[in-house]
Image 1 (cartoon, rainbow, N blue to C red):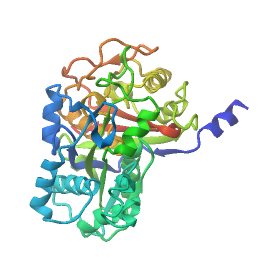
Image 2 (image 1 turned 180 degrees about the vertical axis):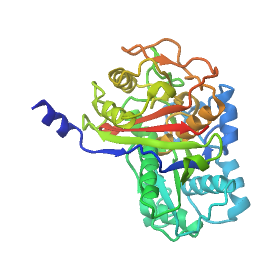
Image 3 (image 1 turned 90 degrees about the vertical axis):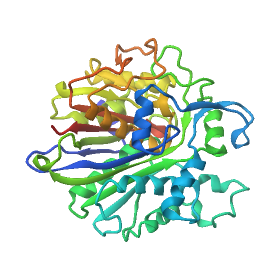
Image 4 (image 1 turned 180 degrees about the horizontal axis):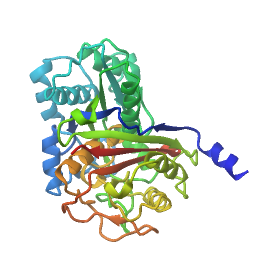
Amino acid sequence: MVYTTLLRRVESQIRVAVTSNMKVVYKIADNIISSLGITTAENMAAINHGQSGITSHIDRYKIPEPFQASVVNFERLDSYFRTFAGESQYTSFEQMLISSVYEASVHTNIELDSPETLFVISTTKGNVSLLEPENENKYGHDRVNLWASADEIVSFFRNPNIPVIVSHACISGVSALLVAKMYLESGKYKNAVVTGGDVLSKFIVSGFQSFKALSPTRCKPFDSLRDGLSLGEGAATIILGMAEESDLPENSIILNAGATSNDANHISGPSRTGEGLFRAIMCTIDGIDTSSFAFINAHGTATTFNDEMEAVALSRANLEHIPVNSFKGYIGHTLGAAGLIETIICSHSLIDGKYVKCLGFNTLGVSKNIKVITEPVAFAGTECLKMASGFGGCNAVIHLKKHI
């Protein structure tokens, strides 16, 4: 009876198997656009200096209540966009993703217009701001639909394939990576461009305010005084390919395994037992020696119940001893971009062999004795887990490995 009940609680679970003597999916190039910059290098430099892009906003988006958020410098982004796109008419959301893909691609020889290149697009809201009265007639009726904005993005790069759209709450970015991995392993495509993002708007900010979920100060993941999340906007791109592991350049990052789950616990509240995340973790690490894990990057929203749920899930998985961090204190919760941005930060942390401290954390405020990272010191491990959780009880976990 217990087994049947648990099966019913987990609506879906996908496992990407770890195999030997086969080609692996690896990261070819990446880009981050956030409040901290419009390149990965700018973002990582700011993060390594402990800089946060979260600031206070009053009357932004015509919202009278002050709130903390991490916002993109769209004037600077627009200037960059015009250097390669001219005067083309795109929404801020589309402009951000196109710029991110372009910036990532200039560091590769990948043919973005090839039938062998698949675009996977991650977002939670897309062009939702076009529903607001002042914007509804700017770009046409269809542009608010995710498929329409996705078509605009892939058409810019003259890609002939129908883009795959992943809109799965706050695990969208991590889920998109797993979807891309499966497509590459099927042999149908040679490369996958995984890009995602979200732009803040009145709809989004007021929605989180209605949940009483926003902190009046910069968020404090896992801290005893945490009192809510900080929102953020941004975009990120990870270009993936496949190769024999022995042929990879040194310090390549391999997307080794992963899983998604849904505990169907509540429309917005996470499971108190961490059941869904626990299952995604166990499915991901099945057959993997965790002794090489340098750290675990949590979703770490700094809300009371999410941080506790993640701590419980890690404890149940016997991973309490592995150092844990959250990146939300640097760039806020970037929604559909979060899984991608944070995976990129994880990969560069592995390459550099140095922890990214959990900005905003001071005193442990969860019931399990997890080891929250407080200093950017060096480490010797070559692998990590990246976790994400979202509304509706969805969870995702991926395992990253540095090729040495």
